[in-house]
Length: 412
Image (tube, rainbow, N blue to C red; front, side, top):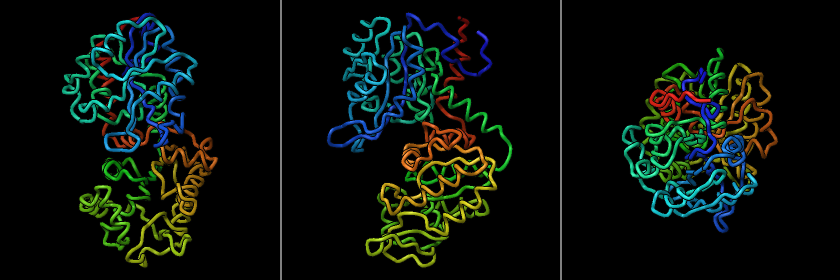
């Protein structure tokens, strides 16, 4: 083996006649009434990996959503969708590591594919812990001995310290799938490029965004962070601005009210590098109305950044050598409030910067706006993309690196 990477890849090992446990990420938008999968892009992103496993016995671990969400459901439809895309039989079983699952795994022949139940139906999977502890979970103990190799092709979930991501590579030779390898190679290359780097953060996952913002600025990775979405609202509120009672209620309902003191500290320390909206958009008399930050009505609900902010942010993008975007600027699902998201995407795409987008919502918005192909890289992950650039290490990748040290395979 002549692998210059610090993790193993599918090209480094003999896969024929081997039993493979693969973690993929096909977490997708789902119709709540029919459970029909509405977007199959994530399934297609794993095609090259599955083609490499044609002569293996392949068992799939994947998740759909998380407990408490409306789209937290079985993976039966996911198996059907994958079978349709691969044009091969993919057998689903509503078990994860029980006797039925283990019996089906032992019966497999070369070329067979088995799709296990939503791994997040198992409670330990959603607990974040150190990888040494995760290798001692029931999931890893029960499934690990049945396989020759573990393949991580779930870049989009690799920012999580879950057993299915970081536990298995410590008891099995851990290998990067084709998608995972491609993501890491592109992002490493982008990370090495010198020059001015801008991050445009939005969406609703504020806990991740605040953590990432702090690390990006503390480690001098970002020259500027442009805050949009709920993140911008929290920074504005933490900075003493009126954002409207309905906007504040959204923050409370999402469980982010206790993040205000943290946001205040971050903004106070790095305000020179954090760009906040100058105006916002609300719904008034059934139409979009753009309002200056210091004139937001008391009962307002902020649904997008304003026109002045769009122009201000867009003009600054021309100074960047790299632009990384994660999360929409507003409620882009509503026609009146997709302007901010669309225009920032357009400005980033048309700039001379090396531009990357990542995360389900912003990628959907880019596709709907006809801009997806204009970006240098469209990442399958949002949180993983941000974690990679934040300088704190990507747990899934770090587990693969550790696995290579433990299982140095000299084959092929």
